[in-house]
Image (cartoon, rainbow, N blue to C red; front, side):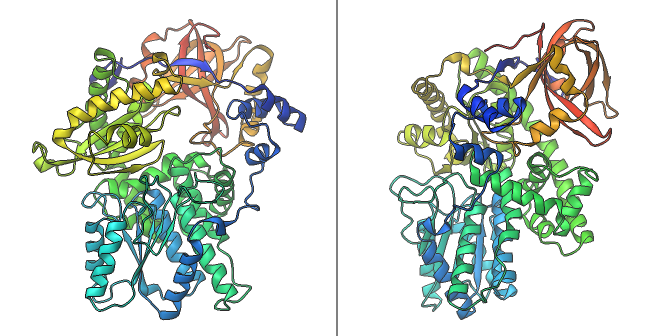
Length: 626
């Protein structure tokens, strides 16, 4: 049982389970000279023994990357050059999340600061999440025209959206023709899954590494990285054509925006390109090359330490997303990233922080209702594909709630909320859903290939780990049954059993006896850092430690708690437990009893030493299954 807002909710007690280790990878890395800890962490996350795979983990590089392999990128580069020569008005039509916001900022900086476009003629048109939703839709197009006034854009460049929006591209060109323009084009840059058979024919150029006919080496890059590659191609084309001088700066510094987006957008961090982007971007972030990063380092209290991927994922990313999740238009996030001074960046960061605090309050209320519903589905109905409708929920926040539920039950989850809460009971009313998936399955395949034929959606899109969709309220009961049915069906195909639909804390290594000395000093943390960044598909390590529970001290706010335990050598350790009332293992703790503590390690800014964070607890010593 856990407690949320005084509501008791039954959730599973996570099992501690060793990660499967690939002996070949372990041996290869040891032969390479890597430490035991580094070799263990890597061998627990990949089965690729090739030298290239080792390089991707230890020293990722993009020297072999060729952005010209992206289909239509040459067409896009030529059209962007033409727009510069004509002095055209350009719209940057992007999604409202971190990936889309980062893309908008990156493209505007690339066009204006690196390629010499007139700043007043390059407009950012971020989708208004709460009113318009995802995609380059007709509503998004209408808002773009409204904002443009007497100067409609003759070139629209999308980012992080547009793959399945060819119809709107056609409507845009028709509108421009009716206004007397004899040229108007759409360039689609995106990274989301593409509807089967779709070629986005109304777009002049369609750049997406997930295109079936694409030759680019990595389909897992984020939308902002696709946008950066398109901008890089345009800049290279301008140099080749003599429009820009040969010594004009490349766009390498803009990798910091792609870094932020890569971390925040749940793309695979097994990818060498994604790992390089994050590592290189973090260098510029920690060098504070723009005021936003100076403010970020101050706000997350890192005067002596470095900003990490985890800081971007759990501190900055949610704050940026909160801008649109709470009804904003994304302008606070854009202004923060484009701020010219520290004072300006600080002002907008405070705005984002305020919105994020509001988001947390809404999220907790939604989580209370959603978890209670999901618990009933899981325990009483035996469902393993969990879909929840929250009539009073916010569709700006339900994606976060879906993530929380997925973590609690280790099941694919979709959480729906009404598009307009004032008409929540109308059967034809649209409800929007955000889905999150477990590693073994693909939520986009389950929904698009299995569910949509008998239960058509108004729209749906995403990738294997996350998706969004819209259906009508009256469709929800049918969808709920089909989702559970097809999750179970696909799990059988994937070789899963019902026991796999149970939360686990994956343990990399049990530290005990003579090995306990690695907990003294910073050695373990330094070894762990050699394989950063950690994130989606390459999770941060978790270690097991045997200990006797000795005491607990609540923090000043009362929400969190510091637990103390004594290891087999008699040394006492402390580890933070966040939101302890929401932890199912709280009820099993007794002073003096033996437990296996699952902990992650980090740098403790306040104490200037390695800190530990409780990820799970099991009764008894060595209680880790294989």
